[in-house]
View 1 (cartoon, rainbow, N blue to C red):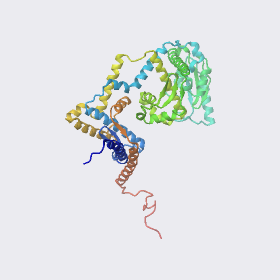
View 2 (cartoon, rainbow, N blue to C red):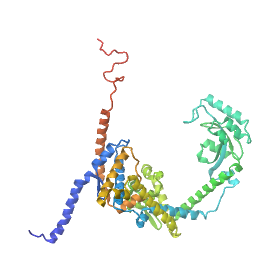
View 3 (cartoon, rainbow, N blue to C red):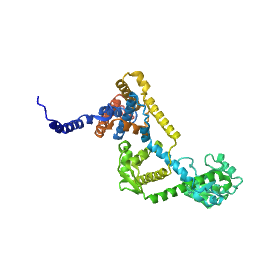
View 4 (cartoon, rainbow, N blue to C red):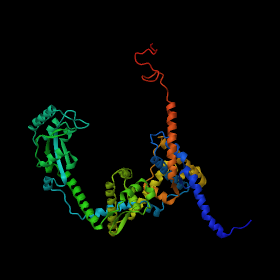
Length: 495
């Protein structure tokens, strides 16, 4: 056998690798939706999960992607448990929770800034002037007919006149001393008797304009003549300062502090010269649609004096917001102007963090230790939810490969239960997901997702057809069905 020259082997290697890559692209990749270490998620598996789901899950590419993402995270968690990885490496955790620690540091920095703001507790003079649009009132509502619940009523001229006259009659009896009693007797507002008609302190914009304007026009303690709104006629008293002093001062201080913070941030923004890139909204929307893909994206969203905001940094901030904020779900749906405002607010946070760094604002050792402990608890909760804790797997398998196989099967069983409505998805919080994605091998295949969605559509159609065929047929013909006699017809043809 002739030995091929080394130079020939080296020259052939790239070609062989290219052929192998082409082969994978044309074969395995189209049948695989995702990989997680040694596990593969096939197109047919996703098609069955989505197409045969007993829950009302629409067959869409987005939902196929959600299933794939769950599968990846669950399999990576299972892999870690099977190999005894406790996921407690502090350096990795620090990187994963960077968004959370940024929020904590920023909050702490703003607390130090706020301490330097002049205190303003809300005086009687500021209350009388309606400062910060804070008002306080009580009222007696004589409602139009049909005004209890639902949309505002549409009274006839006669009904309007009748309600107005009743309100005028009540107003003639009302004084500051008997207002609460009269509200309990005449007001149609729910719970008016218990509250004496009081609405407490509120912002002007919280009420409909006719009502708010009427309150603002009154002096503290003064009672209005009947004021018409879409709900009926209101007899309003602007509450005296002494009656609402504590509540007013608390809300006033909060509003004053918020205004001072806004002024501080605006001044900082002007000094930092925050500038958005022309495509910032487009890049931001792409990032929130697939956070995992953009965590290391260096594209620039905004610049400011001394730095810039990258897509990856933006993604980290988005992940640090609580789930109930629904940033990732809502941002792609809102206008670009709103997205740009949000991106700018994140850039301003980066500027504030620069100030926090200069002020040496950080977490103390106790807080850092608590963060590691919480992360460890989070890992344990996910393992327990999936039934793949290291102890459970050690009791079932002797070798890592056996434990890995058992863990992978349990993940698949849990996914089956989720789509059957028999179990809730086990949430994998963003910091834990980021750590898993950084530490282990994984991938998703867009072409595989497309094929899985197409196959799931066919599976769903077939399942719906079988379900329809298995429906018990009615033994009593229903009116209007083919071959069913019309009402009064004997069923025989007439000549």
